[in-house]
Amino acid sequence: MSAIEDPYRILPSLAIKRRIHHRHSAQSVAVSLASRLIVKNAVRAWAIQPNLLHWPLGYVDSLAGLLVRFRSSAEIQPVQLEHCTAEWLRAPGASSARAILYLHGGAFITCGLNTHRSLVTRLSKAADAAVLTVGYRKLPSHRISDAIDDGISGLRWLQQSGYDGDRIVVAGDSAGGYLAFMTTLTAIRGQIAKPAGVATISPFTDADPARKLKHRNARRCYMFTREALSIFTRYLGEAQLPERRGGRPGPVVSPVDADLSSLPPVTIHASSDELLLADAELMAERLERAGIRCDLHLWDRQIHDFPLAADVLPEGRRAIRYIGDFVKDVTPGRDELSTGRSGRMWSASAPASTRVG
Image (cartoon, rainbow, N blue to C red):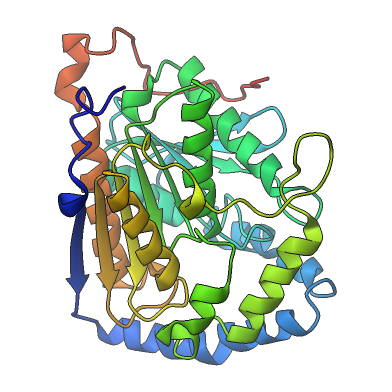
């Protein structure tokens, strides 16, 4: 689609819509303190022995499944993609007119369908949409390129279920934000589909740690340390991700270094105090330079990926509502189903188990 035909392509000087949310609740103060005392020290421990401590991280999602399995009010159906599992989820009353392809966070090594089910359920309700959450393959057993392939597999599944690109928003948090950008770019370049939008929370967008290490948040982040970031960068490099053609390993590809001119509208939510704020701001700058609409929301005094704690954080719930509004803004709604805008039909549910090759 050319710049003239694309209604969302605008002048670089007008591309970024920045909003700063200053209010913070008593709950966010408590969560930030807990994160600094517990999570940040756990991250420090991981940085000392990243390979040794991989095994407990691999069980995080299984443990979360024991806690949330009986609390979800959403309609959930398992989906089998080519190389991984996924969930087709719809909050009570949510429309099937639009869909979200969701890629969870977890530093490419942990978390999954269980840890993110509550967030995804809230997002389904806020966006009035069904959600396909992809349990993509993770490090160290697999490569980041495998996770991107799993995102593409999820996108193809949505297409086979009747969703055209203009009814799909690709979303993700943290490492899943990286995958949301890379999956969308891969889909557009391969002429598989052009999604209607990209929605990310605290996205990892720059594999080069230099900018983050120099940022003012390098020492004030409630969750990550400078040392852990350096170790994580080295960990990715040692994993040799992704592969170049011909079987030779290459560096991790950063979305901020890609040609972004073909992307649909983007929304980014991040904390003004987190280490990955540098990635969010740089991505917004690059999108502005490419003339792509970017709604950048900065949340004061929140932890990294704070909407994941929306069950206790009012700021997390507000952020999810904003993301839901974005999804509804860039996709047609229920009332447009009967107009035949895309010429296809949608069912309220998907097959209980579907394999996509």
